[in-house]
Length: 127
Image 1 (cartoon, rainbow, N blue to C red):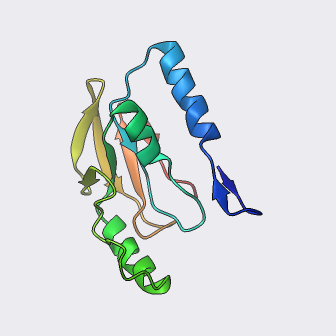
Image 2 (cartoon, rainbow, N blue to C red; image 1 turned 45 degrees about the horizontal axis):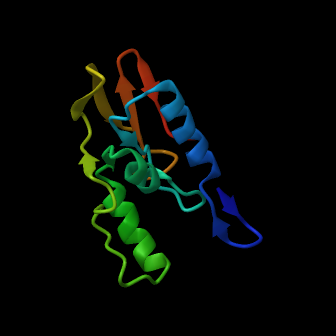
Image 3 (tube, rainbow, N blue to C red; image 1 turned 60 degrees about the horizontal axis):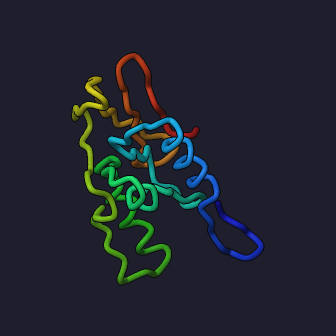
């Protein structure tokens, strides 16, 4: 939740998601980002601290971070993907609740966009 006028962030939407998870008795296995983007934020770290689930994104996030580090003149920023627990490579496989999952590099919207194919569903980035 980003408030443009004040420049502040909040966690209302993430907290609503956490309430749903708790109310349904669900267990979060992964927090999966599909891409980094300069015009919106991820609640992955916040959700991870609340659920204990690991975070992941595609390995090409490092290329985007290096670009942003230069553009935003942010010399101390660690452009190594260390903000996530796991960096997935194209074609890498894992599972979610015992369901096979595969990572597909799908650039276009951003240089680092990926798609998660989990069972018969594909979770894609915004376009």
